[in-house]
Length: 140
Image (cartoon, rainbow, N blue to C red; front, side, top):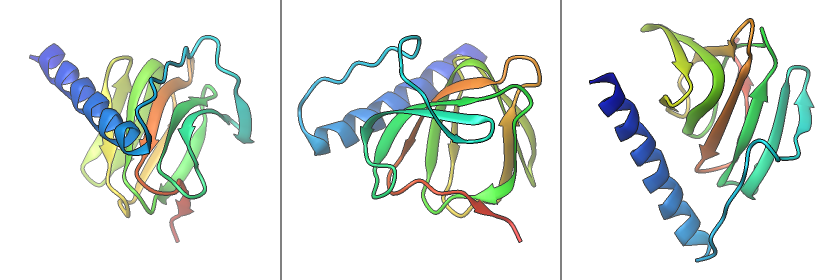
């Protein structure tokens, strides 16, 4: 059952990706996370933009959290969709904790206050998409 839910989540993420990429053009996009060139965004976080524009949105790319990375409690203006490729993305909100592991999908609605971080040993490598600009708004 868990595998079916995981595969359904991945299928949804790919369908959304397909819709956004189609809207941007009909070019095929392939990216290998093992060969991607990552740039440091802040201590503990590096990204590799695959398509789009993170400032204007929409965009998609790989994000890496260092082991033990702690993003603090925050929200995003726009929805964030992610599929973990390696390690674990740690997530907490009022509903509880989630360990989003390799092959798992997570959608975080825009404006939803949450905490996120990387697994203490492995960190996290994930593919992430947003439908508008990407931002991180610290909770007050």
